[in-house]
Image (cartoon, rainbow, N blue to C red; front, side, top):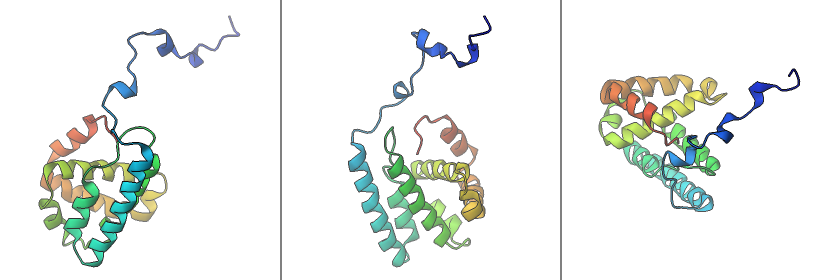
Length: 157
């Protein structure tokens, strides 16, 4: 009896009603290489919009059609880096105006990225205060419902 470590047994293998992550939502129809190519194109368009001073356009562009699903981790991280560069380049006085111009779906997606940025190791040192400022302003504008929708959505960015 002492030879078996019961804590290492995966009991979900024996449960036919086990919930699998792929059953929670439909993954995107695009393959990972196509998704990564799209995100790289978005990053270039965002840099162009930022050089013209169009923060709202850049933010809208990066928040539309974010990469979801398994196998697209590189695209997800590149999209997060692109978004954080937009957030870092925006003056704090402009943040409420930018957030008010976003659609509710874009606000929810932005909240997902804010939480992902705060959860990543090492990111808190680099841009943690920026992420917290955007979180505070977004919560003031979109309300706490935005947080609830993000926490209950199974699709992660």
